[in-house]
Every structure is written in C-alpha cells, then in structure tokens.
Image (tube, rainbow, N blue to C red; front, side, top):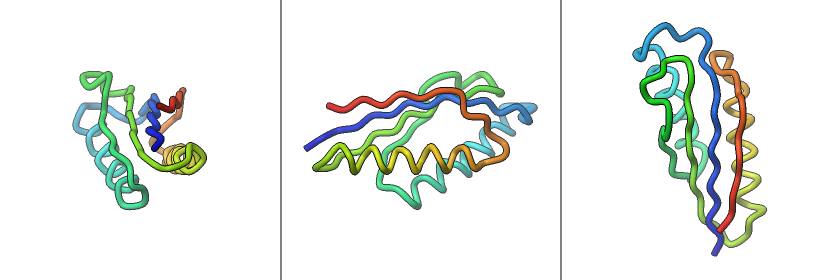
Amino acid sequence: MIVGVMETSFQLPESGSLKDKRQVLRSLKDRVRRRFNVSLAETDEQDCWRRCTLSFAAVATHAGLIERDFQRILDLIEENPAVVHCDHWIEFY
C-alpha cells in the first residue's frame, strides 16, 4: 500500500474578499471530490484572500496510480480561470 500526499499553492487574483475565495474553493473542492477518490483540505493561508494552499492525500497499490490522479487534479486546477497555479510537491510513503 502506498500513500501519496500532494500540496499545491495558487493565487486567486480576482478575489476581493474571503467570501470570494471560499466560493472559488468550494467549487474547486466539490469538482475534485466528485471526480477523484482523494481527501483534501485547505492547509495554509486561510486568512489570506488572494492565496491558497490545498493538500491532497490518496492511497493505492501503486505510486503511478496516485501520481496520475494528482496530475489530473493539477490539470483541473489549472483549467480554472479564477486560479493561477504557483507551486506543488508530491511525496509517497
């Protein structure tokens, strides 16, 4: 069994308040949860309305399966016009 963890940070340049940020994040998190079997949470910069850090965790029998899903999640994030992807990292345990 392999556990994969991914942390991604991005900017929300159009966001003017925490309410705007939460609306974009809620939509993004709902889409990820519908399409992928991963756990996710906002793990940093909760009080900053133009930056966000999301962390994802997944379990599978092969690291390649997790890596494929994580790449698809990154693609989904980058497709969102309200989001500018900054950085990410992936670790396996």
